[in-house]
Image 1 (cartoon, rainbow, N blue to C red):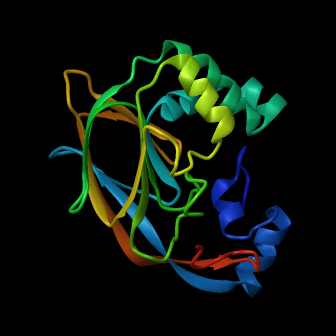
Image 2 (cartoon, helix red, strand yellow; image 1 turned 30 degrees about the vertical axis):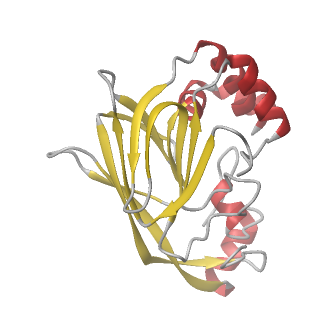
Length: 217
């Protein structure tokens, strides 16, 4: 893992501190078998892998609309600036989310399927070696309410009203209306009526740094 992006979320999770550190770890770091997520669309569409997350809704829109100039000036903060602007204009998602144990349907602000990203204040970092996704559904709320919740519960804590959090090794996210959904899969954007997700346990060996936590609480 050689970090070269704006936020370097995956590198941070894996304990890779810099480009030079990544090069050093390529020879000396411990190799860990990490889960890989895959997202499959309708028949004829390709099956796409991801390591960090696949996001539908407001965060996906914010990440795609964040300009290169903003990223250069503000780094990770650029996504927050764009997200605040988009909150006012976002219409919400009519979506259905289903796993073997949990089903949610309604109007949502976003759906986050995480393999290696901290979405929740309580529950910690998604475990990349447990064969499951960390899934968060944020219900649709007024723009003013969304701003307050974001300020108080910056990481979408499990105790936040209107937030559903669960873990699953497979799930389905589908449009529950006429409009397809825009997904951002590790930053790659595509529109689908439905995506089927499954985790591939231990599918990729990656060298990690000393700060990597295999099974966070």
